[in-house]
Amino acid sequence: MMAADEHGKKMTVEVVSASGLLWRGHAESVVATTMDGEVGVLRHHEPMLALLAPGEVRITKLSDDGGGVVKAYAEDGFLSVEKTITRIVALRANLVD
Image 1 (cartoon, rainbow, N blue to C red):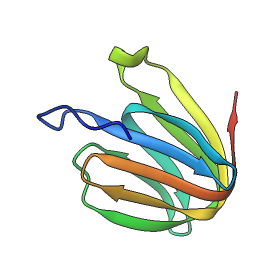
Image 2 (image 1 turned 120 degrees about the vertical axis):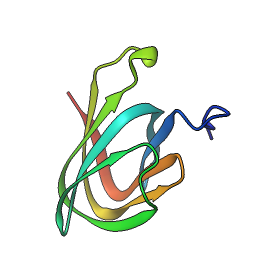
Image 3 (image 1 turned 60 degrees about the horizontal axis):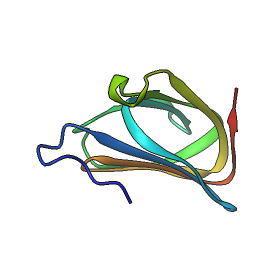
Image 4 (image 1 turned 60 degrees about the vertical axis):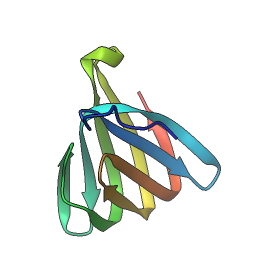
């Protein structure tokens, strides 16, 4: 698992499906569709756990890591935020172009 730098300036994001790890990297932000609506996560977000609704996950990568946006579709899972790690864990998930 990737760790944050010593000052916690980076947020590590993992997208995991039942078949395994789909994506891991550092990100500026994550936006996911939950049962309560769209949720945005930045580094140093308060710890949280949310049930995913079927929908898009958008990960804005750090410019140091090439920038850009990674998109995934996820359903039947949850979003977990703890310290500098955000995980999207879903029974069904795939990366989309």
